[in-house]
Amino acid sequence: MVAAVGGQDSLTTISLYVGDLHPEVNETTLYDNFNTVGPVASIKVCRDMETRKSLGYAYVNYHTVQDAEKAMELLNFTEINGRPCRIMWSQRDPSLRRNNALNLVVRNLDPSVDSKALYDAFKRFGPIASCKVRRDAEGRSCGYGFVQFESLPVADEAMQRMNNTELNGKKISVVKFQRSSERQSGKQLYFTNVYTRDFFDSWTKDIFEKIFSRFGPVNSVYRAQDSKNRPYACVNFVQSEHAKAAISALHGAQFTEI
Image 1 (tube, one colour):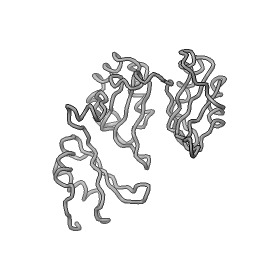
Image 2 (cartoon, one colour):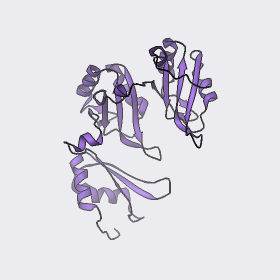
Image 3 (tube, rainbow, N blue to C red):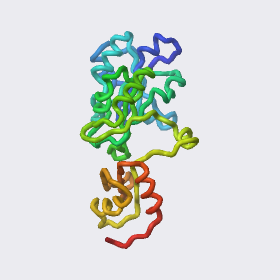
Image 4 (tube, rainbow, N blue to C red):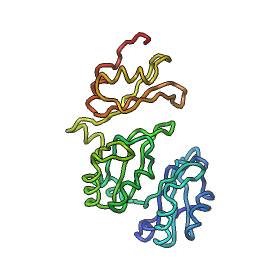
């Protein structure tokens, strides 16, 4: 099935973007899931033009706004082929998609907070256009996420009321999203995660914490391997300035085995 593409508002309002899809999800799989809430008009899984492999997202079109709203309510964050999908209204207007004032960055998230938990925490303020917790190549939370609202007053209220509150036992930071070019043109970059490689195999989480906590309180440490089986570690600090200090002092430093 191929989705209709057009510029009419009536088509745009009943078109849903479905993201974070498993590579093997196809039109038939989506039809079986989305047709349960109402008659589906058309579906298109977006694919690479050369390899024809799925790009991980699709468009599902309904005949009525009511059916599309029902799908958003019942199917958002449900699993398809073992992976939670993320649904939002299709927005073909680039100026609205890129409106940073509507987009919030939520930092210092507990690893237990997934996209649905983040959505549930913010939905009381008003309609959410998109919500996602960023994850690494192994599927682990990176400790931050994005919540984009449909209106500026709602986004502002959510930021003011949720900043410095606790979510799953950790105090979160909520700020307006800024592109890297905007941050570099007047404000310093904010980050709390420090990634490191080329360490001794014997180094445990306790050793990493002992080394890095000299620069400030450490939230968490984990060791893992990337997709090429190369070991790395991630140290999450409470404050960004402590993470920067650690990088400044330890980048390129030589260690003996502890």
